[in-house]
Image (tube, rainbow, N blue to C red; front, top):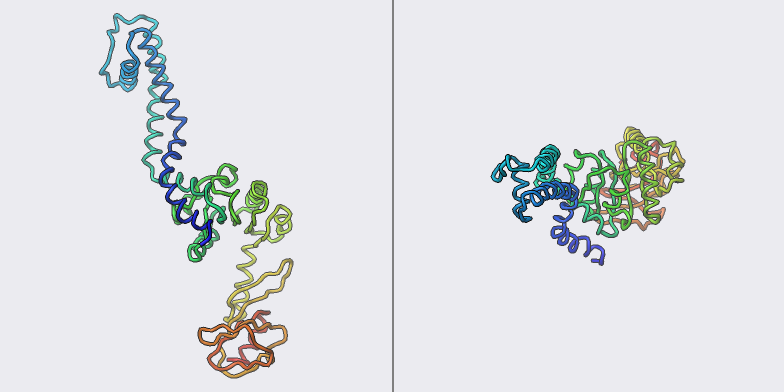
Length: 337
């Protein structure tokens, strides 16, 4: 196991659990500062006019604002200036106290706040991982495949629905067009990025952003309009995948032959290069295949044999993997099945 995998799989998970609470506190730092200012102003009035010490003044100020009323100076003996200041601070602070405390409590007790904090810390400290950006089935499918392959990844999405379907500490929930969120996903230390926003213009904007933040990054952009392929490549995408066109071609190829196992798309080509798997039910020779079909592998039991000559004989029970035009698959079936 290399150093990056040790770091990503062992060191980062341990540290993120220790440091995540500080990330949550950063989220409520502004509210805490505002709360402190409000408490300070009320306490200052009691110090100046009631000559209380700081602890007593803070205690008195909080009591007055929260209407608990455990401390209430004699109103008839209070100077008019003190009353006026208290009226202004109470009017200002009552609503402020309520909203600030509610925001703080909501942030602290909300499970998603802690999960997001862990994900952001994880993202900024991982190395050599994949960042998946966007939403929809493309991202979900990619995540499932990466889980099976053991690939390190972080997802950046604005979709809470998608986030709920993925392991929480690997999802940064936020606007992918925001540089801050891209950095939180660890884009600067990532090995590659997969971008699929659903809207091609948003995908293009993010493609440009990630290339600016990390020029050596390998970028895979999933788009709907294949006519934009050259635009995305100019923008820095290393691989452009026209999703709707791929689905259409695979569907059409599968309709031609039920032997389709995959499909390859050369750039700027309308031809389908399809992977096909055929069960050998009668003997035949490789050189009897149609000339535009490329034989790749002969499967014998659990063994793969990619080394064979054109004169090699296919035997019953074997399987043959080929690459070529699916329109020719019918001839292969007639030859082998």
